[in-house]
Image 1 (cartoon, rainbow, N blue to C red):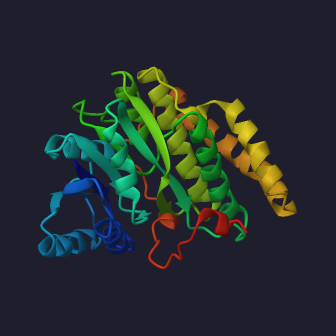
Image 2 (cartoon, helix red, strand yellow):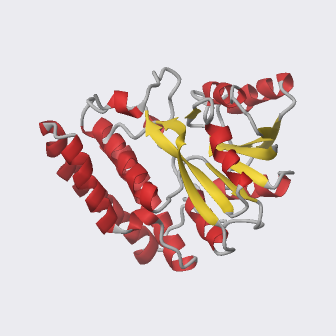
Length: 308
């Protein structure tokens, strides 16, 4: 039996936190045991804290930590690492929905002593046929999936061994920060596509650029400050899997949308480069991407069903 501690870092997640916690409490486990669920609520100004406290009163696994001041996700991650009692840690946010065997699939891999970190396959709930940004959400996460099959790239939900004390406090990409800390100690990183987590991509250009800009700036910080490059920073593998995706999905509107998504992504990456290199801007905290936060009415299904 492999025991784990689960950490959930949240800020103003009242629209989704109930459905998320429901999905977490309904996990189907075999050789994995959830020892504790530590929910760190940082500076929330909505009903997130009261909703989490209600769950904690009815379930002893859930421990709530409230931080009045919002200090950023990295600070919350480091608090979780400090408070967690088990060797295997599972880290996630509250703006996702887990499938029933996500935790089992992620943590079960640690029966292999060479494994140091595992990550899920994120699947957007956006309708791929809803327009440019519905397509963009699916395209980016599909490329992430295909690249990760060859060179694992972690995202959204990760499990890892408690073999370090903290991640950099100025961080906007905590999963990417953890990767070199694990690899540097000789452990393997494993992408687990069977472990799935639903999320929601931005639905407008402003939110899309804000999110992609922040992520790229964070990846640059990892590259230059931790001497580590995440798999999706390498353009050639992305180009190859993009071509294979379009061959499998040759809809005219997808072919039309693709160069637009590339242009917006390039512009976002330029802004992220500008933030990090030109003006030394820090993303320890960031503005909420509001269009990604409500999954409460999401109809969930297999990724192939969403592209049909």
